[in-house]
Length: 88
Image (cartoon, rainbow, N blue to C red; front, side, top):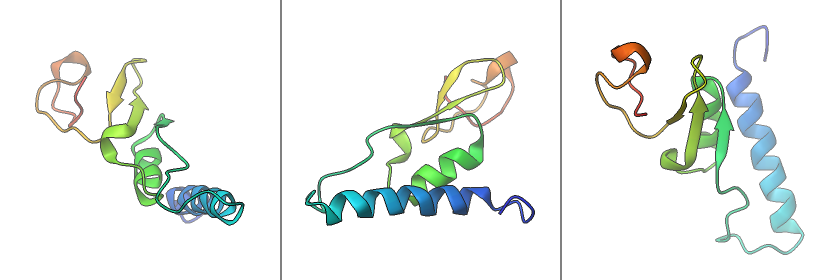
């Protein structure tokens, strides 16, 4: 995964395996295992989303140590006033 730059697929697969383990242990399938996800790269958001988290429950810590909501895109609200697609 690291060589192919597909780490997000690996992370998503691991998260889904963890959820499957909880469900096999008796957790109801409609009862979410993960409620929030935090990461520092956009690909972390992609991995959490692929594992079933709602994009509004995924948070990315940007290079300026600001926490951004992965599921919200807004123009001009990024660090330094740039158009980075994040909502502060």
